[in-house]
Image (cartoon, rainbow, N blue to C red):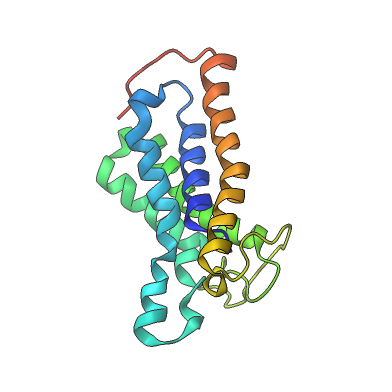
Length: 174
């Protein structure tokens, strides 16, 4: 299970991919929103703590359907003229479940297909920060640093590519 740092960086990267013709100085609020949305599925921990049942984690908040709902809410809030932004935010939200799916080797998987299936799916490509709730502070710090070493360069490459390779000209996109 990746830590919030990974989810946030991936969410910001996803939003950057949807917004190729702009600048970080103009887009930082959207990148930040993408990061927050990508971390938000783990709000299901409130249900885990409130109901004292671990089964809530990685359930409906990590599903494809929930990402579609978030996208539709963003469309409703931003209007059809901002379809690209709504899709960027919905995809950032979806990235959380997909990252958990791809990186879970141990324990239960993710209910990506909820409510159509209660099966917990996992691909298990690589175990990132497996069971962080059982890690001490030093281990969490080490995991966070490793995740930053993996995902910060990806974000920087995407930001660099959209600026230099694509010849992106600055433009304000709200």
